[in-house]
Length: 301
Image (cartoon, rainbow, N blue to C red; front, side, top):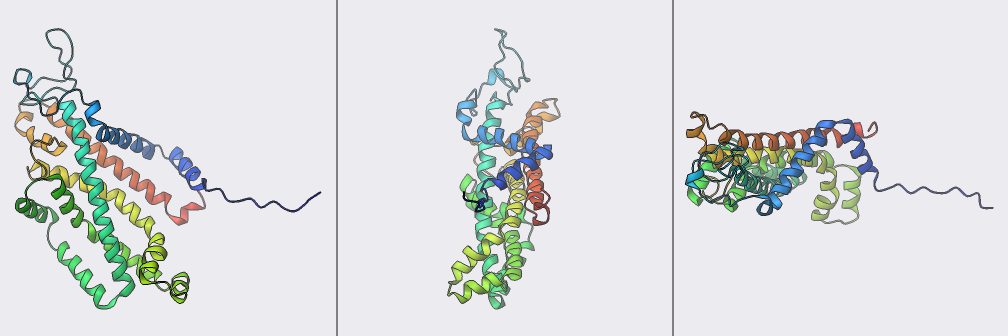
């Protein structure tokens, strides 16, 4: 009879179980994930969900209130119509695509650029660090919304232009965090060991250092998506975000300015609620990620 002890292999799903337990205890992050899932589904399969063409005008049905039945007694526009008779629900669904597309892609661009520059500045230090950080200080000296307006006026409205401008505008915060974390890690034993074994600079930066600083960067990215969505809505509100033929939540708010005082509340309430719920959900999720990824709380989770 073999009495040798059996080695129990650690399960790979333990972090997921801990995440499920954490979400079960904190109800708000779970609700935030549900809201973001709904927004994501609307963004991905918007053409299939939208009951009408978001740009189709119907002057006869203009400014209809939500749930107003037509002559046949059927509700044709569940959330009403705008000043040109366009379906508010369809425009709301299509607007989710622009908000998520701009928000996520801008964060990816800004995060990749800022993290790379922050790793380089923190690892090498000296003049390289000074140059990168002074460029960051110069950018922070100008209000970002004014810089975005200036570049959009020059380049013209467009989804890709908006993504690039918002992405470049977000790199500073990632660079500062990555730099600080890299400075604290570059003299650690495992970094010295990798250097002694002949690992190249890229390997030390992106294979040894980067995995150990991803937690704070992930938390910042979750908050940053909400910030970028607000910036996109603000620029679209000013008419500088995307072309007028592309429905966005910010543009819908801009179109409701003249109608709100006349009692057409639905033109501002629905896109405003969509922006608020999406931004709030990303912020709640960021709060949960900050607590979940905190190494001091992992032992008690």
